[in-house]
Image (tube, rainbow, N blue to C red; front, side, top):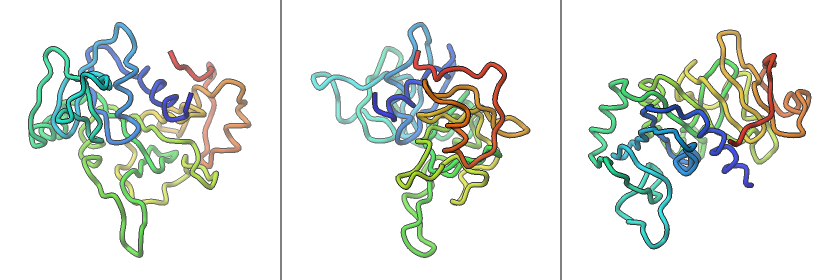
Length: 221
């Protein structure tokens, strides 16, 4: 199983029955494919869709119906399509129980940086998008990211080095190696990948963290 699918499968276990949840650009869009059986959740996309399902088949997809990343999605009974103004009215109005966001960095204070990669002096890409609204409007923020970058450096920081999307707003951090909750006193390790030890996780994590008394194996179902 590829790392990004692993993260999406684990993230989907955070969905609760009856919630309204936004799936952000990038890795979070695939969470729609792994909603647990028996869980009825109303998924929202910032480009203007409410109540949708996973990726359609080649025979059934419609290129005009897509998620925030431009990938095809499945409309289900009761789905609604509208403009982005309406979508952001829902988000800014505090109507989202949660949002799942990709991240470039997160840190032990619950800060998240997910919009600004430096491409030149004082120039960043790709741009803020809807992330600023989402972290301010959603009641729960789940950050999804690979544990380290291509150079093997931790993306779970003591302090974010990139411009922040939101300060102190992350509730849960999910990587392919571990799951952390963000508590007032810092990060708490609650799950780690099979075969890993706490010391293994410390060796790849810049941030300080404590370990939950009932720390368990990384769940996929």
